[in-house]
Image (cartoon, rainbow, N blue to C red; front, side):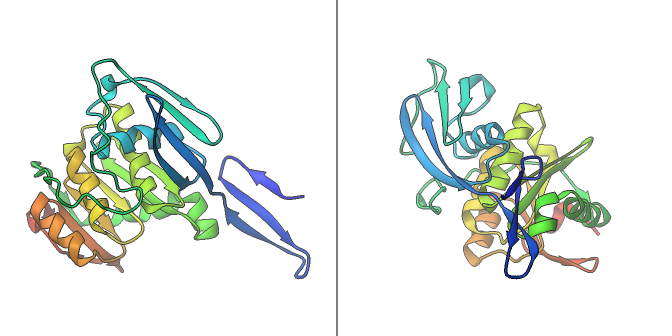
Length: 246
């Protein structure tokens, strides 16, 4: 029989032909229902789903704070959310669960005095890899961390977008000041990921991969510092380099 490890969100699969065991990251399909209306269907890792829900609703502009939420009920394949009476669900808001499709929206400009040193960036990415338990065993997930003074919140997911949603949700739950935090993560930097940061006021994103051309354009427009190709103690600063102390 397959043995499931809920803590690490990994399945250990025995291959009879080779008499060995491979590790496989778990993914599942989840429906997000808000005020009785289906908002989206997601393939994601089945852990930290409350964090995902809060982060997704915040960074897609469905809510503005925890005060907008009355109740979140997480079931195996459905997440039910009830917004408070003053918060109306706007179905025409930005939604990137199927790609960044609402490109005519106004991109917020991030105002932040945050400055981060080169060593802090490199050390944070190294710590991210060390804490990425599922990623280190399978390579089958993405990982993201929200970093700031006194906090380093890590979440993993098979979706690079959901990994970011989860750390943003955890940050909101814990009262983290996004303007004094930055994100380090795996995966490339496409425009929909950058829009998520702009919508919550996070001013720096660091990853080992490169941004896309459209991701660069949004980062420049939104005032976000994008850093990529982090390797061997070096990295590229693509936009707004004034926040990085070299």
